[in-house]
Every structure is written in C-alpha cells, then in structure tokens.
Amino acid sequence: MSFKFELLVEACLLVKDVIIVLVLGIPIIFQRLFNALFPNEFKNVTGQLVLITGGGGGLGREMALNLASHGCNIVIVDVNLKAAKETCEELRGKNVSAYAYQVDVSSYDEVQVLIDTVYREIGPVDILINNAGLIQFTFLNDTTVENVHRLIDVNVKGYIWTTKVVLEKMMDRKRGHIVAISSLSGVHAFPWAVVYSTSKFAVNGFMAAVAEQLRLQGYADQIQTTCVCPYYIATRKDIVDFLQKPRFELLTTKYTARTTVEGILRNESFVSVPPLMDFGLKISQFFPLKVQQLVRDHIMREYELHSAL
Image (tube, rainbow, N blue to C red; front, side, top):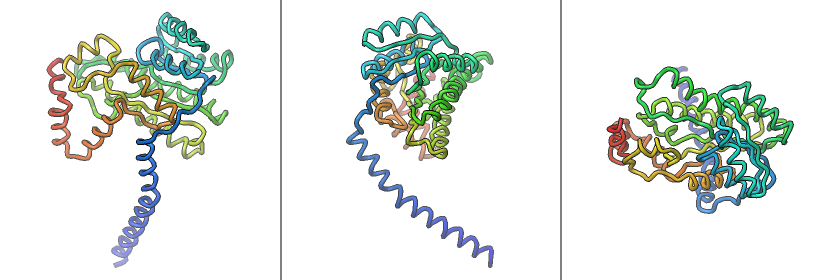
C-alpha cells in the first residue's frame, strides 16, 4: 500500500513539474515564433576582433569578408599560410586590420601558442569561429585508421582546443561569442560519410554542453554561443563531383556565410542553412525508423547518392 502511495505522490509531483514547465515555456515558445517573424536587430560589432579557423578559403574566407563589412578586424588561422595571407589582403581592402597565422588546430600546443600570441600582440578575441574541418565521403569499412584519427582530431578536437583556450579568457572578460560551424549531417546522419557525420554530431553535442555550462556558471548573458548547421556547400570540386544528383541544390558559400553571420549578429544559438531544413529533419525524428527511412528514400532521395559509392 505504501509503495502505491509513493508512486502516486511521484506521479503528482511529475504532473506539477510538467505544468510548471508548460506555464513558463509557452511564453518563450511564442517569443521565439515572434522573433522568427520579426528577427532581432544586429548587434554592433564594429572594431571587434574575430578569429576564424580554416579562414584561408571557402566558407571561412566568405565569413571573414562579410564580418569585415560590419567593421570587424579579423585573425585568419589556416594550415595554408599562403591562402591565409591572400585572404588578409582582401580584408585589408575593406579598411580593417587582418592577421594571418599558420596553425594546425588539432594540436593543443599550437592552439595555446596562437591564442597567447594573438592576445599579446593584437588583443582579446571577441568572436571565435571554429570553421576548420575535413570531409570524407566513405563508408566506415572503406576508411583507414589514419584518416579516422585525422578527421576526428581536426573536426572535433580542434574545436575543443580553441574553445577551451579562448573561453577561459572570455570568462575573465565576462564577454565573448563562441561559434561552431557544424553540419546538418550532425542532425541527420549521412551514411555515405560515416566518420564525418559522427564528428558533426559530436560538434553539436559539444556546443550544446558548452552553452549549458555557461548557463550553469552564470555566463549565459555575457558569453554567447552559436552552432551553425549548413546543408552541403559547393566549396570544393570533389564535393560537387560526388553529389552529382542531390535532391536539393547545393548552397553557395556567399549565401551560407551571409546567413551564418546574420545568425551570429542576432545572437542566435542555432542556425540552420537553409533555415527550414533542420526543422523538417527534426520533425521526421518523431516517427518510427521505417518512416524516417522513407523520408531518406523519397524526400532526401539519398539512395541516389549511395549508388555513387
């Protein structure tokens, strides 16, 4: 009898907690809907210092150019120093300061030296954009051990190292913004790029955990986080060649960079590119696995890409 009574008490407490969440949460949901229709104004970032990894080309370069148009000074970090310097030359044409560094972000020691140098010689980083990444189109049994190590080291550890070092300094200043360029393959598993998709799921989880850490430590209003999940971007020929018959048109770097920067300037915690694709993919996850596979086969039409492997 006492056991049944305890279950009843627990059930009543749970119902009470659910009601509290609904009462507190519904206004937040309506606020988010309102913001979707009437987005927040851009914050002023003129004169702020932005550090972008993998900024020598592709999306990193386009984000740098876009942010320079908003008056940001830029630090370009890339394993290709020549490309980083060329990007900096373009940035200086927009009347901002730009600095190039050659760093392998998978090395914690190199990242530590980089950040110490930037803070000593240039100044504090206001916005960190983790963008450096590798992509590999292979099934798991076709990839090598060496490629797995390298991809995880760059795509996951690289984000952790830069965030760890910069976040400590942002906490001291009680201001800053951490951005991670992830992928929709971190929301919707891409079977023809197993290790890459795994790395992006890790990035999404990492950013969610960092955001929650900041909330628990009382920094949520001072240090912003943004996780960006784009669809495929036509940044390299090998990507375009592999995705010969995608159901949806590949994104351009300019569109992706513009959408990403707009999300950063609005302090959005999550940015999907294009905006509605993430919502559709998450809705599909409420259905049984067989239904999700129908979405893959008839809406995403992924089986057509499988035949390319």
